[in-house]
Length: 101
Length: 145
Image 1 (cartoon, chains in turn green, red):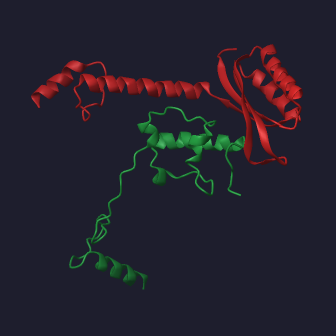
Image 2 (cartoon, chains in turn blue, cyan):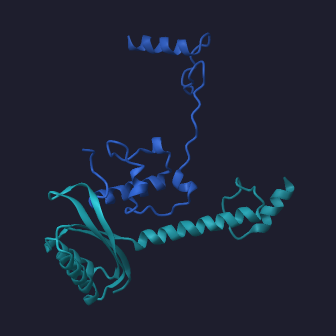
């Protein structure tokens, strides 16, 4: 059942072509263009993220005050680590909330 | 004291304590550190801020920041005192010397990369694997290609 549904969807995507097994996923019709995300901290050449910089950190804790994942913010791994650490420190001394109230 | 460590200590003083009391408290804390051989390289008030969440029914707090150089033993005593003091609502100690060293290293590496890129004439990104001190072979390679 579920297999059929998936097949239908794929066929709707690229008509006429048999589904190439194992190939990279390709959205049929309009190819999805996604702007390539670049790490903002790399651009700004940040070496150290300070936990006291509330203004900066607030941009990375959207409404639910969760730490913004890399796939959204586009941060690189080293900077995401620094950022996460800084946010956790800021939470500890009540500069940032643990959870949105 | 084998090595010098650098710490940042942030603490929050209850905003309802009288001005002179909190001033005395801050001074006392500073003395604790210096008595134990630590050096306070920075001591500043970060001002009165609204807390991100309530801490013991309070919604505001006076933030203070110390930067301390020392062995670590003075930090232990300082934290003990802050735990006991009622006016200190919360504190956080962070060791920063290692982080700063790492940041310095990153900065250096970037500077080195930038200067290399300049001397290589814009390209050479693909061959930037190693050889930081051998510009001659790189030039040969470019001339050949």
